[in-house]
View 1 (cartoon, rainbow, N blue to C red):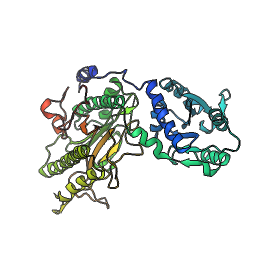
View 2: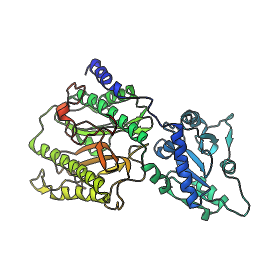
View 3: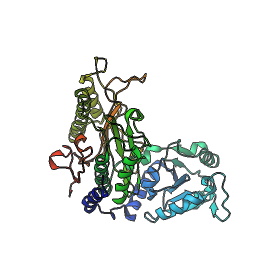
View 4: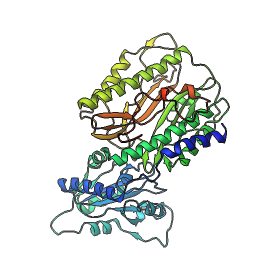
Length: 457
């Protein structure tokens, strides 16, 4: 693909992107107030969440820390007043810059520094001192501490410090308190996610255009990464996925130096992060060869599953049904779908994971909101979710049963009240775009469930 076409793509999508669309300090203060009101209702004096480059959603949502670097970090939220983000010395420089967006404060902790470094001039504080500055000690009344992040994220020594100083009975893991609050999205959040998905569509068109035998997976990923950054995506929700041939079994495999071969299938995935929020686009296509009838049947079944899940989602939204209704409808579709195997049997294809998951300040690690057989509550009122339907073509022994190793369709969608719309315009089947220099998606090919947010495209 020529640079001319990449620039044409960027120029076409650039006017659709408002780079100044971001969460305001006023909205961060509303978030703190919601959390603090929930804390007060449960009798908590202080809440503590923790994160890293992997699990950054909680503190991103609370304080605008979208770009953590190197070390772990945390946030202390008093029942009244301004939260304090605690960080290591090196990562703290970056976090200090991030906190300009929210107005949260920063303190450095030695516990979060890189383990074998020595920072002679860093102004470290003690966690205990910071806590008592935020929540003054009252004789005869123990402080009650809520731990908002999973025990997988919070350092053991911090849990023991809280328990040792305030008593184990006064330290409570309450991960749902924050997860449920940030599950519901403001209109500003939904608009930012819409922008992230505009970027996803643009970058994906660029990746599809360069697909040809002989190109490396990393070359394909480089095109997507370049377009995403040119359009304002500061980072990605996961390393850009390009998995070809038998690497399809990795399901989420990042691009490598492997060269694509004629006749292979390749799964592509991108997740641009725009001003802290994530978009998505994943599809599977064939390189340099005609799709066979059996392969087409496999893909058609996957498209059918996507449509069954989206129709069920729309129905559940209109009737305020339990979210498990959506999962059941998807499973029912799979039960009645029988595909021809490589050894001439008829079997239902297998899905590797649930059909819908929550998104926001992470691509999928929000900790609450996935649609499962156990989701008794309806979907949230105003939410952003991702439909992620996929089939694995191999069985538990690793034997190839169907003609494809793996196939996927993943998009992002919004729900406002009883209305639902997919953010992405990309068609469910993108085979027609492989090797083609397409600048915009033809109107008659746009995803049938695409709908812009109310109030504009």
